[in-house]
Length: 199
Image (cartoon, rainbow, N blue to C red; front, side, top):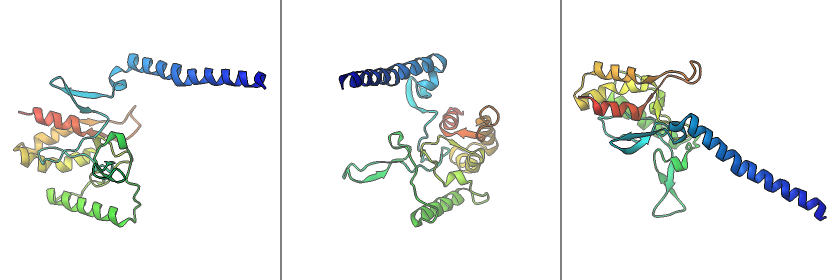
């Protein structure tokens, strides 16, 4: 019996060390050497302080800023730990709402979001990504169309010409990865930081 148990325990310990320690440490070391910024979370600093990540969206409520996609992430309710409350862009609780297209609550939320966006810009069709959440709830990007849709509101709130803001959006459009993967997109945090730097 011991002759069978000993090799199994040795193999278990060796594989646990290899897959639980050696491999993760090697991958972390390689990532830090090859892509240090990305391996550290693609953090964005301003004035020496970390203000966000290029990989995680943030909530911008003011009309002076471009807004990202809605986020369906939640957090535990401080008053009752058995319940959750909305917590947009909560990276500790990444995920979608899991509401189906026939769910009344989802339909009402989307209708309300469409009405709010139409009030901002009644002359344009509302881009889909301004009223639908991403699968992670953390998407930091919007489509170029979604950014351009918001230009009249931001221009009015900041007293900046729409032409200047359209050029700013155009300068922040990121192309497809490797020329074929994904869609053109705009990082909302990067766009808003440049917007704050406008004189």
